[in-house]
Length: 358
Ligand SMILES: *Cc1c(COP(=O)(O)O)cnc(C)c1O
Image (cartoon, rainbow, N blue to C red; front, side, top):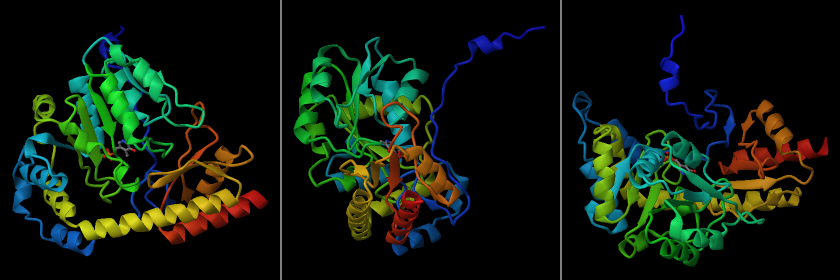
């Protein structure tokens, strides 16, 4: 007897998330989490959550969170969409805006979830190779502008860490007036001031900017992401979201996520610390002979002199230091190392010194 239900299965090659080991002694620099925990103020908000609210369904519109984000970004509330991490927001954007037979465009080396959503949702896509120096090939995006089904740019890009200038993003948006351009700003807070294009969402009606609490806001565990765009695109996104799962934002995330946006001093303080550590760590890696791409993020993407990235990754893991290694074309001799606290980064450097001299 044979069973044929398998022919009807939606078969997908899933995204592989970084490992989440349970051992707290591991120096965990593999998923770009923020090494600084929530502030005392946020801990007190967590302690004062109203347990009775857990019995109820949450506010499906997450209006408290939407309104805090609107205030923070100085936009109206109808220009904010929230979701369960930016992965949820990006997935919803793919489902909502990429609904043609035309290819969507994104770089060959970028966030590896983009091709996974495209495959899962049967959206045709075309990879635009990064240039030799791992920067985005803006003219190629522009050349494909008239006929694409959409564009996705992570800015700064991951895993390269490189930030694209504002003028280039504007050129890409203007070359594709008939398709939606998603700019994934997961790491923008670690970049130079003025790199964000959120302000351009009032100027271009095909632009949507996606943000996350997981990196700069230290809350990967809560799963909060959001998008800023024009009211029309936000309405289309909400229509798809409410047709799929209405109660995505849970009560604790709404309350804590709202409080975190108000806690700006702690945010600025931890950002500055991470950026300082990143500069120090980059110099140390360079003095050990690594090639380090210029990072506008909370990680560095670096390649050792002697082609040993994979060996370093494996040996570091045995010593309890987790970094990320991608066995993919063009980047298989690079390591992506999240910036942790100074003490941990010093341990990474001393591990590398030992590794390179033995
Ligand atoms: C981490 C990351 C995300 C996803 O973050 P969430 O935790 O789902 O908010 C999205 N895009 C890029 C480029 C990322 O690095």
